Length: 255
Image (cartoon, rainbow, N blue to C red; front, side, top):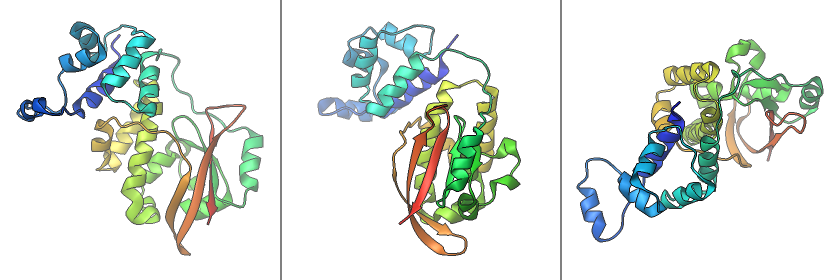
């Protein structure tokens, strides 16, 4: 069975590479961007045939040494290399099932004065508090199957108003984070359905998705345009639940 996500990721990373010096002039005359397969194979110290099999997503298992060599050849950063490893080791499992936030987690979230919510692997919103509802809108009004934070950010006009001029940067960042989870569930009907909704509701999504960028969650600051109070700066951070690492708690603290 072909590993299409591995194939797509390798091709996307190869396409962004550039040559230096004398080889660059010839490179500019090419019709396709990036390096050739044989050039990546040479960089990695592996046969062209072996690399072609990898980029075709054929059922092979590269060694740890080969993965490290590919990381250097494709100039992957730490996050991208980790994603490559996860794609190589991905095994087909049972269909995705939406998680349920434990009652103790829901009570904890509801007790916070700051906006907070809990999401699962597919970024479905599983729990939230009154402060989050005031800031983002009442998620209870959204049918459970569509209650997803990335779907909200990408397709709801309220989200564009909330993030203002910073919407595109934040939305693209979130897509790169979602890519990591998606590729581990590629082919699953629940994830495929969500991608279709992104494509239908967000004109920018397809180009971001085709770039195959991957990101890692980090803390930071956001300028949000509160529907009543206007522009408000928040610090935000995310945490995994100890009893279920699939669950992620996001908290916003007004500066």
